[in-house]
Image (cartoon, rainbow, N blue to C red; front, side, top):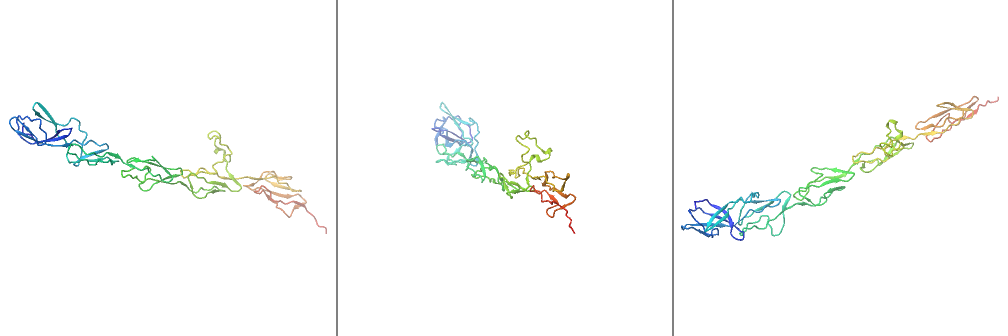
Length: 377
């Protein structure tokens, strides 16, 4: 053999155990080593009497790759992507037998050295009994049992008041939950809060939103009407509009014809007598109300006013000797009549000469015509 550099490798000793070989630099031209080569403190004899000493160390092969983790040895991450069959071998002739011994390669671990198992993000070392996070290489060329990398889980997210969370069970680190607020409520954000907080490796969640009521401002009462309640209203609730005495809710037919909807075409079931708006408008999730009603006067009319005996009543149509026409308005406008007496008659002391149609639908009490009497002297 030629003078060689120090060679380190490993080969089977027995029972599939591995051992490394350290061949010190010697000059052995034409040496043929015996079968005993490779065992600790054993020697290889050559025909010319030159003795080649081999020192054997038992080592462990590269630690198997860990799912969702990595293996580190002496501060370096082990590479498990080396192709099978890439290892080099040392050949020695023992009689007629050619011995091939695999040489040690990067990733092999000496006995009594240890490797360290590190888990990827969102994973952690398990807690199996008799398994270790930093397994040692034992003298028999095998490793202690190592831990596995298992997922980190957060407990179920506690939904906020008036809210819901999906999913409702445990969540793996790195995944998120989604918070939704109940109808009538909206998301309220504080610094750093999220609608979809993430489960962190610390088994805690990022800050999440809370749910607060959606409030509509106080409803503006229509002219000649009132609203209950008068303050703010939460979404999903209604206010009630009441028109004052002498007023009613506007109907669709009260609007100018150009504003009439196409009844029974675009909105089936809609009738001219339907209200133009809601008497109980709903506070919506947009913090606005449905359209409410407006209040319009309820017309009040009076019956025909009878003309007094020996007199007349005067109205919009002129003089009436018998009675005024019916239908004069007492509300929202107030129409009136004027009473006069025929020649030879005068107005009575009691009653009014100008009578008005009242809001009650009744006429004021008018004067009558009485004869003009001369005194005898």
